[in-house]
Image 1 (cartoon, rainbow, N blue to C red):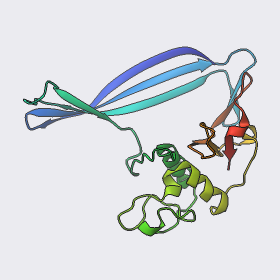
Image 2 (spheres, rainbow, N blue to C red):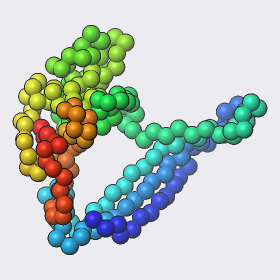
Image 3 (spheres, rainbow, N blue to C red):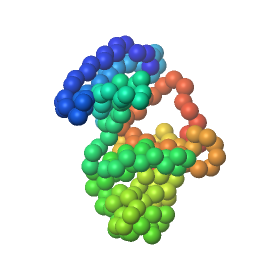
Length: 206
């Protein structure tokens, strides 16, 4: 793929006075357009395309103010994830990638299962909202356990040994480190055919 164009735009959504400073909510969007190299084809939602568009937006909450004990005049945090779901970061066991996959599968119609905080490690329970002090089950927010649940308990997926046979809406789980533990999860939305390919042995599809 060759990058044809790139565009960055920004907007200020709100400015609210907070004490001696201000809280500013701003969004920065990046739009990319890529074209295939010779011998490469792009298929999205079953249609061949002559280019691939990619867009992502970062939402920034910027706090502007004075701190007499520090030379810093502002601090910035960034979050552009679905506000209806918590954010997870389970180091070494997926985290927000599996969280995104779970949200996609849930939006597609797969029902969650109920559980409480004692079920946080239960591979047969899949939910972002366990009762009790825990939030999500590890099957929701961790790539390896998400794979375990979808394979053994969801009743909605079958295992495909070749990643190149994964259809739209399928899920690919990857072990990038070669440790035997699945650390990443991805939803398939299209195919790019031609050119070099990674080894399919690193991915498993449901």
